[in-house]
Each structure stands twice: as C-alpha cells, then as structure tokens.
Length: 405
Image 1 (cartoon, rainbow, N blue to C red):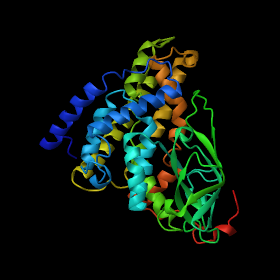
Image 2 (tube, rainbow, N blue to C red):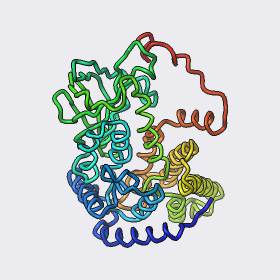
Image 3 (cartoon, rainbow, N blue to C red):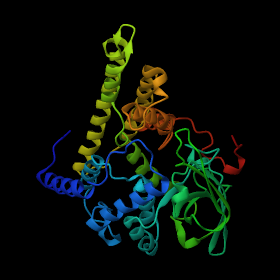
C-alpha cells in the first residue's frame, strides 16, 4: 500500500485545501443545538452551489454531462479535505453519490442532460426508493408494482426508510414489472417526480428526535416510459450500479464520528470506586479493542485507495469496512453510555458525551444501511474468502409462487 500522494495529487490537495479553508470558513462545528430542518437544507444548498461554481462537483463524471472528468483519486482527495471542515453535505450524499450515477449510466442521453446539471448545482434533491416493509436487504423481494399503460407506467406500492424523501424533488424507484419471472428478473427502475399526484411521503420520527427517514406511498403514480432506467426486467442489474456506489459511500467511518480518543477522554473523567475508570484493566482493554478496529478500518480504506491510485477497481473487500465500522461504533458507544451511567442519558448539548450518545442512537441504523451485517458477511464469505455460495432455493422460482414473509 502507498500512503503518499504523487506530486500531482499533492498539488491538487494543496489547491483543494486552500479553497475549502476559505470557502468553508463560515461553517463552524455544530454547537449541539440542532439546526431546524429548513436551516439545514438551506445550508446544504448554499454549500453545494458554492462547490458547483468552483468546479468541485462531479469530479469523476464525464465532462459531456457537466462533470470534471478527473480520476477517482481526485474525488477522494476532495472528500478527505472536505471532511476536515464542518461544511454541510448530508442532503446530497444519496442523490449525487448513488442516484445520479445510476441516471447517467442507464438513462437516455436526453434524460441525463435534463437532470444531471440541476443535481450538480444543488437545485434539485434526489432520494433512493428501494427498501419496503417486507423487503429490506432482500431488494429482489420487493412488491411495489409498475404496470404499463401505453407510453406510461402506473406505480402502486410502498417504500420505507427513504432518507430525505420529504425534501426531495425526484427519486429512483425499483419496481416489479413481471410477477411471473424469478425475483431477480422481473424488476424495472424508474425516475419518479416526488411531487407527482399519488405520491405521499410520511416522515418517521426517530428516537434521536430527527425525521430523516420516511415512508413513501405510491397510488396510481404515472411515470413516462422515457424515464425508465435500463431495459424492462433489468432492474436488478441497474440496482447493482446504485448499490455499488451506496456501499462505497457507507463503507468508511462516518464523518466526524467519535473514535477511541473520545472513549479514552471519557474514561479519564469518570470516577469509579477504585479511581478513574481509565486505570481499570477492563476499561483499557475495551479502549484497545476500539483502537485496533479503527486502525484496521483505516488500513482497509488505504487498500481501496491504493487500488484506485493504480487505476484498479476496489473489490468486495469494501464490505469488510462496512461490517467493522458499524459493529465497532455500536459497541464502543454502548460501552461509553454504560461507563457514563445516568449521565449518559442526560447530557449537555454539544458536549463530547452528547456526540457519543448521538452516535449510539445512530449506530443501529448503520448496521442496516447499505446492507445488513448478514448480507455483507455473505459477500465477504463468497467473494473475498471464496467459500461456497449461500443456498438460494427461490432463485429460479416465479415470484408469484413465492409466499410473503
């Protein structure tokens, strides 16, 4: 593995760092008082437009559709430098990281010309409509139906856990267009207007107090066939493009997430019957476990970066990072709450303990987003370790003959 920038990469990093330090100087570390959603959306849109005007969006995308035509390493360098700031990015991570690459990869040129520029500038926000109440990580088990009616498709069904659906202008939705085909072969994907008649979005209140996730209901929603992505019945193939980008996006440690240092500082402050918690062997062992996991995640990410720097495509090893990141965060923050005892639930907004508590509440969702632990362990077993594939008795059975869970 090569941990060093090439001279050209170092020059680009210096350029990006200087621009971000100036452009993002007015974005300070959050104080702990949560921003109102309208304020958060406005801040994200302002930052996205600022990047767009400076030429720091669509860095790896073709110039023909408004991108910069640079290498994945340029994108990684920008992401690394941007992550050092507190500039808001969350509103666009799904749209630009997952949806729009699917649109310009599988959509007609005129579709890409219509949607990509406005997504890049931040004018339009996108969401990903995949999961359903009875089909989460089993994406091929979806039941949302699309029926052709001339040059249009009529969509009926329900999606769930759709991030920022209530603030999105458009979404990509995977549907079942053939119930008599096997589960992976009867799917088709479409672009859907989130304000079209028949689309109903219901925010889901989370225990953290936020409402980022949503239920989305489709009742007789009409979509033009020109807004189909890929061929009819090839929705699984198209979905893999989205999922590849999703797992790359969520594979690393979340931005500004607490690590072993936060746990160490907490252990120094907590007093036990025998003195500071940091002096206890069992506490030190838990901190050491977190440190080892954090370092392993960093090195696995470096392996992926080294592959990209050589023009290679990172392999399924990225799934390892995702499994370890989610598990480590949940275990580390749960231990922090246990260590803090009652004060772990009554924290001062903006404090280090508040950040640990927030990460604890989010960590369970991280073990689901981008593929559950079970799905990713299968990927690691089959594609990294070369073990026999998991039994899939329903693989060739017509979907209409499968019993709902």
